[in-house]
Image 1 (cartoon, rainbow, N blue to C red):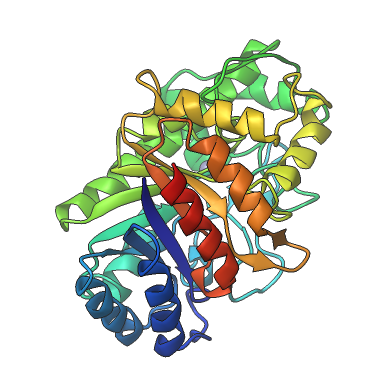
Image 2: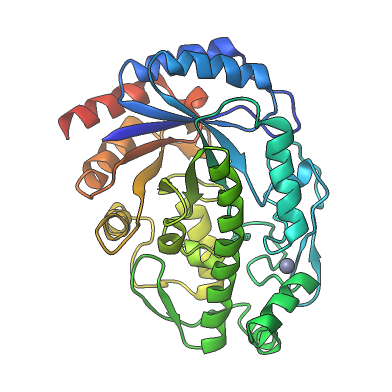
Length: 374
Ligand SMILES: [Zn+2]
């Protein structure tokens, strides 16, 4: 089993609140105990901080990836064209937060993609990263931007043009979505994100969103591949992914590894309890007849994803080992049961999420002990 760790240093535009000394201390503690092969670090544009970290990692033959938020948070740096919901309302940022606000731009807009790539080229391309880890490669989920219909987007002029070009009956979709605001009428779930809906236009709507995300990411990955970067993807848990435009199996053909976020104790975006509550408000309780964030179901999801008919790249299970009060209280018992269950699947390893700087030593010690036992 290999281990990847994440280091969060703050948003794109804020000065980093962390010192290199803290990064060094935490990194060395983890690297001395765990089989770390990659570090994912972002997002401030502080060249010196990354360069010093690169140097530190190189001594241990560990790769540094820039953790790069794509369709959300980039709006804090450049003016990006927003999503438009089925009622024609723009879904714009209404709060000014400098670190993380989960406001997504339209992923189908070529000008948006150009500006997002410029953010990398202007701030990060000269640093010498080994790879890039792409986060927020999706539309909003049901849990993002309460009161707005982020999942039921996008109907901006660019998207409408695309729908017409592929003969997608977007007017029928608008009418169906107005009726389905409270229930999606799911009839079956087959694993690996494959849902069946009673209404065919709903099925087609989510399929086309996934197609848009795939096509845009293909262009984005081409740009980074040309610069010799390895690529990792941050993706939702399989059962949540389709509602955000992620076809994980298809996306896995574009990158070197995926990290499905199996956050069973996170009460914030991407956390399974948090996202499941929001999904159930639209899909009804008991969506697929299982407890969606139970250990057993999560292991089953990972198993399907990591066997031959699943992902075409390596899978690292994203698990929380940082401890943040009221938000993600990962303790040693949680780590023990999680690694016990997930290690029986065919995953390549773990992505210890989402911030090494907030990980208590006992959580790292427990992870090390558990991995030695597998
Ligand atoms: Zn759009």
